[in-house]
Image (cartoon, rainbow, N blue to C red; front, side, top):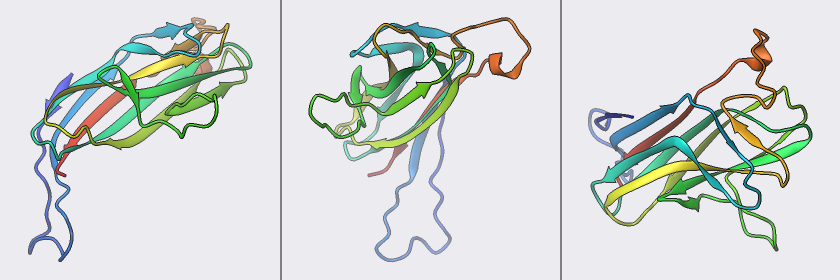
Length: 176
């Protein structure tokens, strides 16, 4: 995990009347190149290694979350889901509707030798200063396995459908 401090960029002469700063206070990022799998169905399992911590300097700060799942796959004709988490609790989810589950990213895999990549952008407002750990959780369709950063087949072939990807999580503290 690396940390980079970034200064806010404000045009010469300042911001237009009525505009707020919205400056970036800090950027924290992590790259995940390991492989992960889960059979968790109707529950979510934290993707070990795909997380970062950020310490907010103000209770009014917001966190811009940039999550990329570089590669995800399941068995033939199965689906999987990913949820963004703060301190182990799912956040930034779809609306509740009946008994349907809520998630941040949902996908369907037609073939076990193919994979999908996803990007997620969201803003979280924890409401207090202090340290928070953000990450990603995964859930597989019942009776199947979901894989991250590899295909389900996982053959040692040079064909592009067996190439491996990395996943990334970047957090930016933004002034409130």
